[in-house]
Image 1: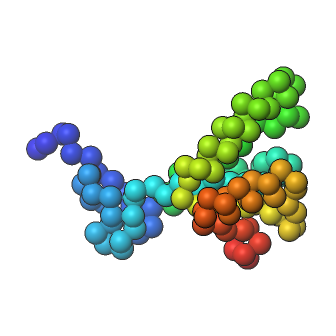
Image 2: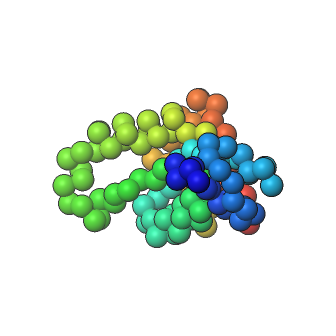
Image 3: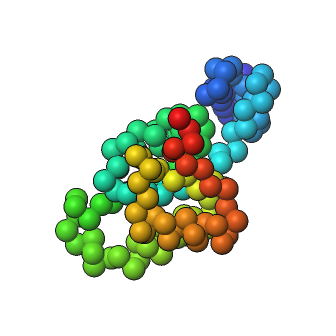
Length: 130
């Protein structure tokens, strides 16, 4: 028996198969991890993290803003760096997801959406999921 073979469990149908296959042979689920960058207000961080966890369990690589200025006082000193990193997340993702709870889209999020449009990214909205 070869101990180097890894079994992968499909999050969609639960079947097991050997790596390095990136597509479930049972249901067709693609394990090549689509990248989603989440845009939205940090006032919805708890809900965003819950949403991101559900997507992660389904095989997506989810990128969010990990910090809020209310949590880290020195964050303002790193604003330019963090904005650059966040815009890089938009550049490298497959899908931009706008967490527009109660249809709220703030000024920064709106600017990020415009940037994603310029890059011709696929954009989805929380309000469309309901």
